[in-house]
Image (cartoon, rainbow, N blue to C red):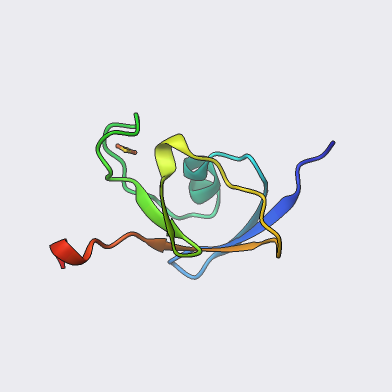
Length: 82
Ligand code: FES
C-alpha cells in the first residue's frame, strides 16, 4: 500500500509533500530547510521541532500520517532558553 502523502509547511515558508514515513531530516533538506542537529541519536535535543504543536526529535522520527494531510513545522523554542 502506498504511504499517504503529507503536505508540510516549513518555518522558512517552504512547502513540500512527502510520503508518510519519510524521516524528518531528509524531508527538511529536500524542502531546502536545515534542521539543526547534534548527536543524531536522539539524546541531545538539538533537532527538536514542533510538528502541529507537538515536539519531536527530528533525527529519530519520521513524518507521521495525519488526518487532514497537512503538518506545520516550527523550530522548537524552549521558553526557559528564551
Ligand atoms: S540530533 Fe541529537 S537528539 Fe536529534
